[in-house]
Amino acid sequence: MLLEIKGINKTYHSGKIDFQALYDINLNIDKGEFVALAGPSGSGKTTLLNIIGCIDNADNGQVVLDGTNLIGKNPDELAHLRRDYFGFIFQTYNLIPVLTVFENVELPLKLLKKHKDEEIKEIVLKTLKRVGLEGLENRMPAELSGGQQQRVSIARAIVKRPKMVLADEPTANLDSKTGEGIVDIMKEMNSEDGVTFVFSTHDKLIMEHAKRLVLLRDGRVVQ
Image 1: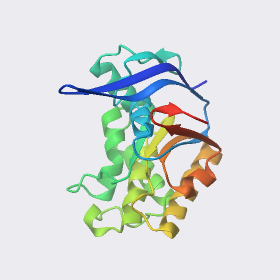
Image 2: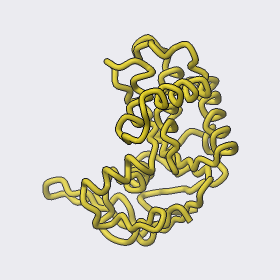
Image 3: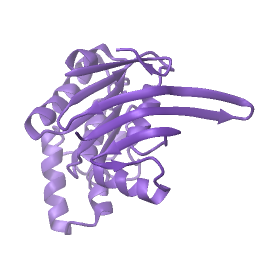
């Protein structure tokens, strides 16, 4: 079991207002799954994704990642777990605009500090070729289409070979044809490389291709 979530709750506090985003969530995710967390806006799917990815903390319960309970970890420990375990794909791409395609994708490897420069170059070029961006290494993000920018973000997410990729509405800003191409790339990586994918989405395209669908409503798992 790669991830075990047991009885977690999450409440946000804003002034005198408390908003409970998650209620008693239980969920297991095995290595190599292709899972979609689906539901309407406000259902809690992005909050759950952020807790899985060590971006946010649950109030209680257990979030056990590869045998390690994340509850109670300090910010530095969570940062190390994010760096070592996860790749992230965002709806708005979140590329660094002053860096080239190559520089955006190499950044996670630089942060790991495990590879020599020549190794990094080889890994990055191979990853860019895989997502269909060969020859665009020196382009700036502003010079790319939305679909190309999302491919850069996918390359950045997988370049360090993470155990799990978390994708928050990855096709929301793309037309249907481009979105299908993006989903095909992720499905290929899932089936051929065993990369675990967890999506937060309300896109029917991703829901149709997911191997498992977890439906949330009002902060609860309903199916």
